[in-house]
Length: 521
Image (tube, rainbow, N blue to C red; front, side, top):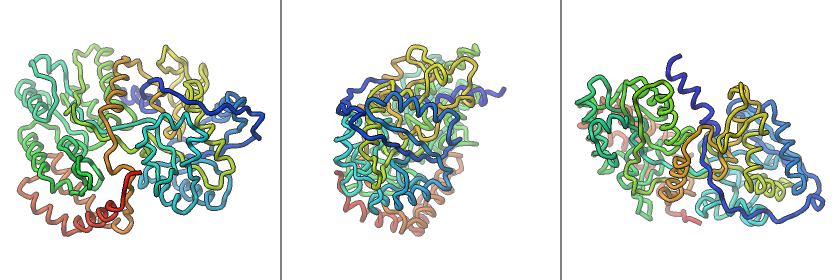
């Protein structure tokens, strides 16, 4: 079996159910006995991202109903819709008042529902006062800025993710080679360049490195910028309270990036055939094969895995296969605050929930969500199912019952779980050292903050065509050439001029005018 398929088998479970554990301080819902509440059926709608309804859906929901019976007196109705029908169906139900209490959402522009437009159309429940009244324990687990990201016109209309993520930049390197050549810890791009040069000189059969993300993700924050829009290459100074947008390619520091990548390519430091974003596991496979020795990667989380998990999986593979190698992840610029990702979520690794304005069960829905997030026991049922049937525990580590594989599991991996993920309770499916979990928690809690613009959502519709043109030109004429060693630095000024002529200035003016009326709640 090829190593990439071995790796895939090792990580697929981790992608579905990875996370960190810590114990939150919970303020529980005021005690209300079920006798005081009439029976209610709570209907949740989710997009069918993979398989939709799982075989044991009703079994797990019944278990939740039973556990909550003395508090909530509810029945649960989870429904899944194909992505092509999801938005239209939910919007129709919201407008008509048909059965629907809560639904899965995320950041605008992620292919899900636009909760901002729905809120302004009066289709969403205003949770500003209701959430703290009926879900005080849930509210207590948020930082205020997280809730602010879910506000529209200063009112709260969504329940964001409790699973914080951030963009950190890491150099994933061969630690055994670091030790062999007496290299110091890598904390800057210059340090990483020294590593590349050493491997090039002394390990001629190994490509020194690879780039596993875009230049915006890798370099902008390290040079003092907040990333406003990664796809369209828009940034602003981290300390600039006025948030004056700058095209990434027009910043003075971008020339430094061009110099780095051009020089690294010319000196043979990089694997240039297949660079790009989202290929962390493919790059890991290349390290296992001995073809490359390192890669640069932006993101504490991508497709659900921590950097610590990358270290664990690869080093565990080396150990189990008697391969005398070791990798380590060095966080670059460790004293620099990292940019937290918007807690509304991208719909793939995390998501949010919104409630219908016409729901007759708004209070009970919030009480249910509060109960879910008040204990490890209730969280485990929702996320992992019934212990002994869907999962088992080895200490705090999650395992499948003997002989069961992920594709055979009748509940774990269900679509929509992303909206309920909670860093406090999420379990690891691999026996990672406790210090790795704690390190992630420290990074995300104390070394990462939301950028000043989070909570602002631009109206891109009037400039959609210009944005698409800019995105395509950035990718084709700058990003891909830089990452594949074909970029000519002498062409930069010409390319900037071409981008300006195709609408970059108009894009900046349009969004900047919108930003001027934005104020954080």
